[in-house]
Amino acid sequence: MTTTDTGTVRTTSRAPQAIREEILYYCRESVRTGLNFNTQGNISVRLPGAHDGADAIVITPSDVRYDAMSVDDMVVVGLDGTVLEGDLLPSTELPVHLEHYRRRPDVQAIVHTESTFVNVLGALGRRIDPVLLNMVLYAKGPVEVMPFEFSTNADFGRRSAELMGDDVDAVVWGNHGLLAVGTSLRLAFKVAVAVEENAEVLLRASAAGTPKVLVYADIDVPEGARLP
Image 1 (cartoon, rainbow, N blue to C red):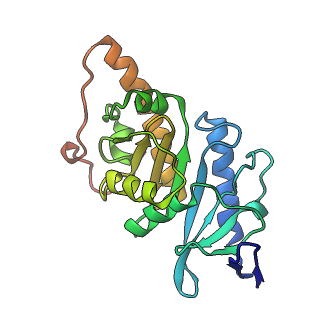
Image 2: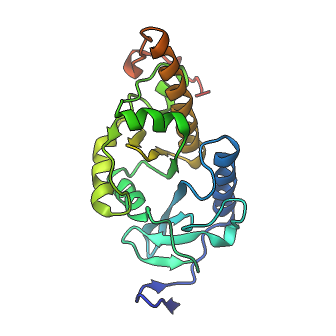
C-alpha cells in the first residue's frame, strides 16, 4: 500500500491481465476504425467486488497515446474515486465514468469516442435517430445530445447519465463526442461503432430526403437471435 502526494491511498490489488489486454485492444481498435486519434477518448471496465467487496473500475490513463500505451498503464479506481492501483493519472473523465456506473448497475463497460459524424450532429445539436438496424439494436433508441460543457466533473457526469437514462446505451456530448455503454466491453464498443455509422447515414440520407426512423420496440427480433 502506498500514499500519493494528494493523500489518495493505493493498494496493491491487481486488475486481471485479460481485462487490461482487452481494454488496450479496443483502444487501438478505436484508432484503427477512426473513432479516435492521438489521445482522444477513453475506456473503462467494471470490476465487481474488487474494492473490499465493492465494485471498482479499471480505466485508461490520462494523456497517453494508444500506440504507446501498455497494459501496465491502466488505473484501477473504486467507485468512491479512490485510486487503488496505477502509477499514472486516470482519465480526466473518470468522474463521468463513475457517475454512469453508479446510475446503471447493468453497465459493465464504457467507451468514450470522438468520431467525426457523431460530432457533426453533436455540433448541430441534432439527436441521432436510428435509421440502421445495428443502431437500434445496440443503442436501443435515439441518442440525445447534451449542450457543450467541460466533461471532467461529477455534475456533468450526473447530467450525462440522466440524459442517457436507463433504456438507451449512448449519449452525445455536444461539440465533443460520444459515451457508449454495454454489458461487456465488446458490446459497448459495438454501440460506439453503430452510432457513428448511423450518424453518417442519417446525415447523408437527410440531405437526400426524409429517412425512415426505426423504433426499437417495433422490431420483432426472433427468439434466440444474436445481435449482429
